[in-house]
Image (cartoon, rainbow, N blue to C red):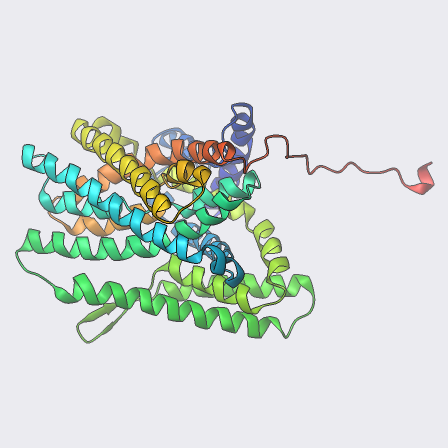
Length: 427
């Protein structure tokens, strides 16, 4: 236990110290946290096997999964704050159209490119792997995007639309992956499972939205029994932890395998709570401050999880580069087209696609599910390589796009440090 506590402390301090260097290089802090994770991971300092000095093995990193899941729950809960009715009335229809269309077009573009690779080199990439990778390409990392928005206090039409699209993107990505993975499994095994392709994905989304709605309503009800700010914040934190735990439950109803999407459950909890609680703005601000260390650890641990062995596999690198180029083209083309169809301003049309490039936890979770395919290892390694590239480059590109859109003020940041004032008795 003491070793894990020392590891977490070193990870937190290491990430913070590296963020100072990132500031000098004009890079987002989230990039520094990921790099810190790589340096402290089992393929760098952790390989020295010095207890407490980094993460000594992939298993040690995996044992911290509860912390990363908790952080993801708080991030999703915060994103739910963006789905306020007054905002949905003005941009909701546009966000839904863009969120669905860009995800579907991204999957289509990646599918076409990778299926062409399969036809040219059938021994390198199977058809089932190509279809699965196409669906994984739709997923966008909400955590990295939110961290960049928070760090630079970005605000404006592009930022507000981006937060809505990212949230919708995850729901659409879940459906696309479930359907594509079902087809891929059918191709690999020679049998079609209608329940797995159609029914179970829809059931998972429905159950997630219902559970999230119930938890959001309960949170608002319990909050009313407390009046002090500290206790109300404690109740909010407890409910997010409870929601994360409940979203991990899995059960079976007859032939149906049922479960929840952590992201959707926590986002729905935040959405319902923020729309029915009159003091939700104040509470969300306090929670955001409270979870900063957890979010930093989330990215440091995410960096430590990245397997650098994939860089030694030429086939993975070639397919990975193809996947990255196809996905980037699909995101930019799909977003640009959907923005034009919904008559978005030129600044949003030109820059929204770039902000949707980061990819991380959701994609890795899908890749882990895909390991059950005969060549699932190929899918996992390609996604690992893509996440490594996207997480290191994506936040900087998001920052650049938001700056170009005029929604990050380069001179708007100030120090939070307040010096002690001399007391009256010392004068």
